[in-house]
Image 1 (cartoon, one colour):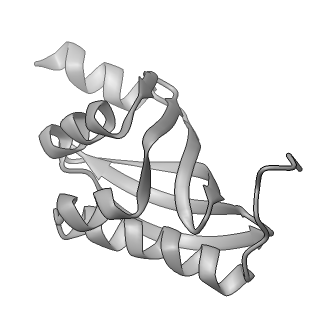
Image 2: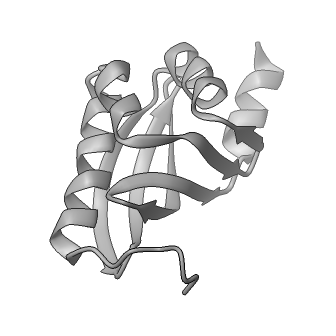
Length: 123
């Protein structure tokens, strides 16, 4: 673990990430934005976003909905297994969220993008 990271209670990190997902589900992007750092880094199967503004510009357009299946916590790391729906297509994925000072600094999402790509080709 990097020296600059502070250790937080596991319930605190988990609650932050769950609150982030809940805010996204409610399309309360202002609340979700308060739970991340300005220099947020997002890495996903279809691209990378550097900075919270770039990430939320996409989220406001896509309006994804999440159903969390499991949550795992270790120190400042939270891993979620979830189904997410975008454009009527539901996909299983995994998100690894890393927090600093009880706010999300970065996260990576892994999923099979083929259903989304196939759906885009049919339009």
